Image 1 (cartoon, rainbow, N blue to C red):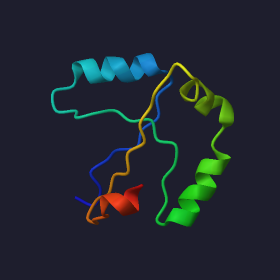
Image 2: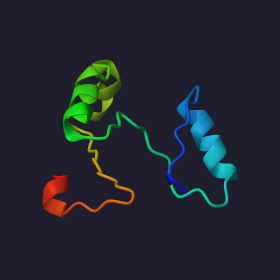
Image 3: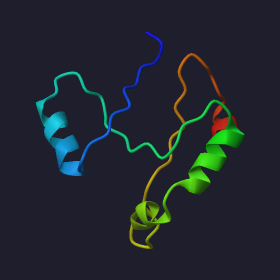
Amino acid sequence: MNEPYWIVEFASENDVKLLASRSVSLRNCLELWGHARDLQKLHEKLKCYPKNLMEPYFQPNRSFKIEVETFCKHFTQKRKS
């Protein structure tokens, strides 16, 4: 296996929920804001991500979490933050 993730596009969040409700071995569904082979390229991609899609997560009454996932590579927790 080269990569443990499938990157797929859905028309709506409800479609994701429907697929997840029918899945037996699905571990999680993530909203991917960007991916790259190095930090600089990832940062460039994230700066280009539409602000209106990020806005709902940056409200005073909302919380969110950013996770750094790696595959066949190890980063210390300090390097991830």
